[in-house]
Image (spheres, rainbow, N blue to C red):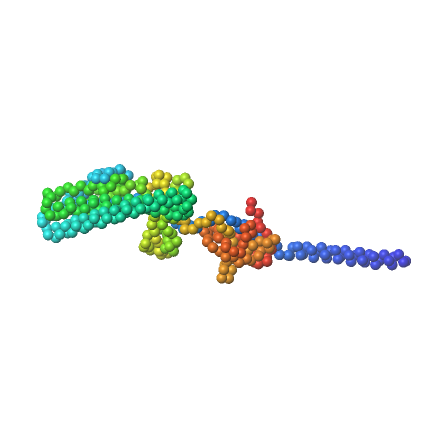
Length: 407
């Protein structure tokens, strides 16, 4: 009887222990299944390295010196036999115009022709003076560049100063070439004006045939009036230029144009050939214009003109070809960088979520330059820190996170 009485409490205790074990297992399973799971996130490292900020936009190539050849007198234009791409030399006959009969010694026509001839002569004088000034500037820039080369070779001149002297030398050389071309064009216009004056004053035979000659050597870029027809004086007949002497025109937003300086490096991509092409900004146009974007938004645009560093490398390009340009406005050899996708506004400043032992921690940072891919960090983070990329609404300060496998 005594043994039976003792065995019953033992059985009760064993049964209670079983239920307690079941309850503990159920509680553990509930805690496991209903506990908040870590948020899966993408993360990237904070690194040190080179950084570059660019202004990216579409551009087009164009012949640097383009001549629009116009009819010097009104009359019957003969059919132009030249085609785009044909080579021409300075002085070659491009077209012929049989001048229309005018009343001899017409006072108004004579006065108009005399005024046009006088203006053309003055234009020659101005162009000659501009050419002389450009020549003096080119000589000065060449001397400065030579001195800069000597100093740079001895290590007494910084790379930036040497590159600035090189850009100034190149820009002065291009300016001299442009001034010489402008002088040629002015002389050509003066000859045409004198021919018109001769006819208006009755010093030429009735209905003379005026030969329209090429003002420069190069190729025919476009024929505006290929067919024979009556034309008025000043009608553009064709365009002539040297397609091997190309420049680049990039239209950028006005707020981006203020960041660009002459001499800035330009990188040409997606131009149809292998690799990239290099260019240097020669001029930022002083005036802008309104352009309607593809979305129908009016934008203020400014033209930036650049010259190719190696024109031979761009020989496959022609006049009016589309390219994509990246103009460098700032670069540094080594900065602390964070992926731009990790940044978000935090109050009046910027913040990131740094991963610390599987937990997201909100960190305020001071941001410098930003190129859309990486941003310069001036304070708040250290090299090697892991930051969350594109944090969603589920990520908050103190939240448990798990980094996705990057592979």
